[in-house]
Figure 1: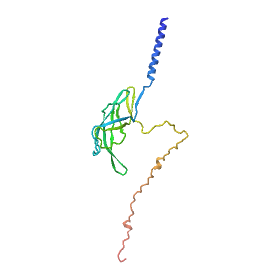
Figure 2: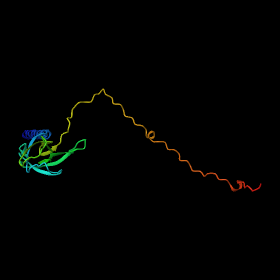
Figure 3: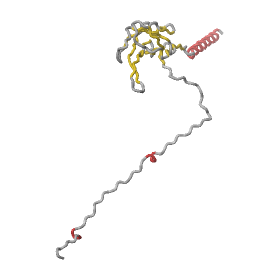
Figure 4: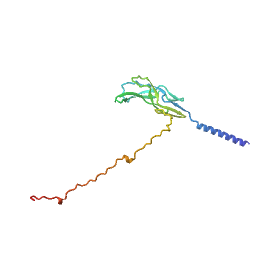
Length: 203
């Protein structure tokens, strides 16, 4: 029965192809991450002088390329800036400070900070050590920047024996002040002309 055998072979092949396609669709794509805190080095393009004003900038560039999965996230020479600013202490004094601005990678803008405070003077060509402040995720064909939480999340379950006290609020009428009735103005009584006694002289 060649017709039956051919049907069985075709049905088996279709089942195998369907199973392979489902397995491929259900298998998760592998994720690769460039973690936050990756060390990078920037080089100053001009001298960093102590006499500059707040708001001034000095150009810097990335010394080495940043790679992930064989792809260049940021090429060597990628531009960034040192920004002159400052901070105010509780006693009201203003102190100068220099911060490193973000730079561009293929997924967007990467926040970054210097490892140590930038203290002028620095000559042109000085190297500044820094670290990235975000993760770069690579899943399939997608690249994205993810800024982690400033604190670590735990998987601890809340205590089941703890019963929170239910919150209770006062009714709206209890919070309102009672309105006092406004007194109605009344006219003061005046004496009629007939009631006024006229005193005759000599009487």
